[in-house]
Length: 169
Length: 349
Image 1 (cartoon, chains in turn purple, blue):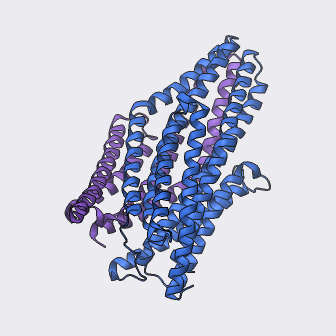
Image 2: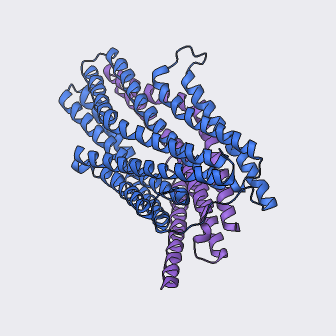
Image 3: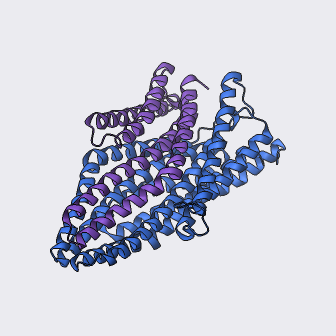
């Protein structure tokens, strides 16, 4: 097993464990309270409206919006960390079939690891700084890094096939 | 039975059962649940129009129950498949995990126990609720699910520790998986990589184009719904409920298409590794591979088309899911036949 495969497998396993640990912490300590808050604020918005209190209704709706914004991102970050980690482990097991020089493979593996770790992190950080342009840019950049690395991997697989066909001819 | 064989069997069984559960859920629960959510919102809007706050609480309590019902079923489906994928991944890296055979086997059994009880715990959250629970907001079903999740983390951590030991010794503890290079394996590997890439591109396109727009639209529609109901315009509020449902549908199909195409890509790649164990003729291996890849494209594409074609597309998407399940079971039969031979040859059965 070469260095790029080791980086992907060990990095993927660590990222999966971290993503699960984060999910466990979130499910046990935060999620239930967040869901209660989410439902409660929407209920309050309608109840205030029924009591002819539009200001309070609007405020409750804003609380709902902010809570939902955070909830969606917390859950997405958890699932993306684990999902990307699994892809990394699978790719790690077949990375020697990516027909590039080992140095290039290491670069691709590092890009996958960095993108897979940073992308969900930048999504979580958005819950502390709503709509922060810098964090959005970080999310776009890191997800772009993952896509580019995967495209390079697919290209590497295709190169292998082409070489095999040439050999067969 | 060796740890690797246990993980391969358990992993495929978890994935197949999780997918079957997802298909049943999509056909019998999903759309009906969405319709009831709309009814609850109409009830709440009517209460606002009547200036009576009491039914609002009742309507949202009902809505909360419906969302929990839907959410726990989706989560059970996702976690069963996720645990199955992880089991297959662990099976692949077993030769590189430097631990004793008995410890490995015990870890594999613990992982499968955790992987089985995690979705069961999540599924029962809606039905068990807070009955007999000593906690204020966490029921016994959640405790079961969280404990099962913790078990998976412990196993994964010990496996990572074993892998770390391999990095020092560089000695495989058992024979590596056969490195055959037949056409079904190549098709699954390259097809899987393409599916994952398509899923990533779709996710990036959705996040860049619609994610923030849809988030803003949700609050705007709710605000308009309350405003119409406050002005005693019940038909207007009902129209907003329809808008809300359409928006929820648009978000759901995009997220489902994104996650399913990536999951199927990952599944295809994992099955590429298992191909040397699939004891079927080349012709049948090719057929199952074609059916699996075709279903993997049909399901997400027709999930996306549900917004335009309605239930017809939904039905075709379910058929795509069924194709993947059938192909998976076909391969499982081959795996069962082959692994028995392998273990018998090595004298480990």
